[in-house]
Each structure stands twice: as structure tokens, then as C-alpha cells.
Length: 211
Image (cartoon, rainbow, N blue to C red; front, side, top):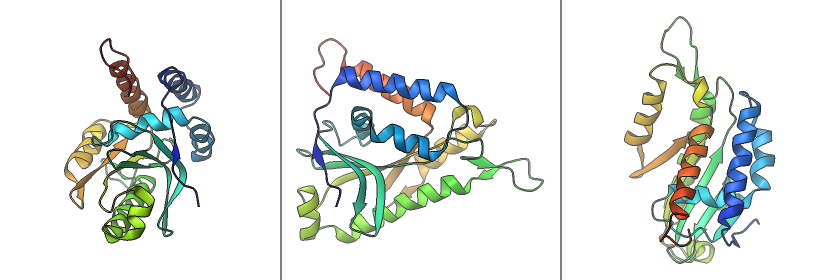
């Protein structure tokens, strides 16, 4: 079974890998999931930097790839903070024109895409399984504690494919739809680059050490 492995964050490598993601996005406006699978798998420092979307996770010192959540479900990758027992579970989807919203009949307002709803629903299933397993010995064996602080992140789509008003709909959904009292973070790949760059800038600011 894929397991969490110790990880030491290298900020210089993080910045380099974020720039590589920016280059990948700049090369095409239509990128399939397979390309992102190959990209993320070989860039552990970039993956680690995704972890602090969970505000309880401050030191991303554990990484797992294709992590099975008690056998029934699997996330694309996961990040852990062993001392704080905080974990971020990530699902990434494609970045195509119809990844976020799709035209439906004659309606002027586009509908939520099946790809987005499918990714969101997978995270709902993870939350269900983690809740069911809370306070069990298996939970403590895996995560070091029976009750952990966890978050789910969905990475999908491109800013340039959003039409007027759709950014607000996406943000409203993230801010107001709760699953077991938890928000699911949903970001486009462009927003991911922006957030990770900002995170790196904070980490490297004079007087701030480490991640």
C-alpha cells in the first residue's frame, strides 16, 4: 500500500517546480488529466506546497502518492504534518474548456460540469470514510492519531475558460457548501500557481524561516 514518506521541503526546488507548472499551463489552454498525473508525480516539492490549503498544516513533512483512503477510495496525492496530525488530500482533474461549466440546452447560464461534480463527489466520499474511521485503531496506525485535522482540495480547469459570473459562482460554492462542517477547496490551475507563488513569497520573506 502506498504510504506517507518523510519529506524535507526545499524552497528553491519549490519555486523551480512552480515555474515549471506555469510553463506547462502557458503551452496549452487544453490539458488532459494524464499530463498532470505525469507532472505532479515527479515534483514532490510542489505537491508539498499544496498542503497548507489546510490551515492546520504548517510543516508539510509527509507525502504520499495515489494514497488509498482505507481501501474504498483513493486520492491523487496527500500531504501530512506529522507533529500537528494535519493532512491534506488532493484530487486533480483536467484543464479543458468544459472542465468547470458546460452549455446546457438553450439556457444562457452554463451548468456545473460533470467533471467538477465528479471530483467534488470523490472528496465527499473521502470525508465520509475518514469520519467513519475516526477514533479507530486503524486511524491511529495510519495517521498517528485517532482524530486528525484534514482538508480536501480539488484542482481543476483554467481561469480563461470561465465566463462572466462563473468565478463568483465557483467561489460561492467553495465558501458556503460545507461537508461535515468542512469546506472543500476548489482552485483552478491558474489560481494554484498564484497561491503557491504567494505562499513561497511569504516563506522566503526576511525574518520568516522554513515552511
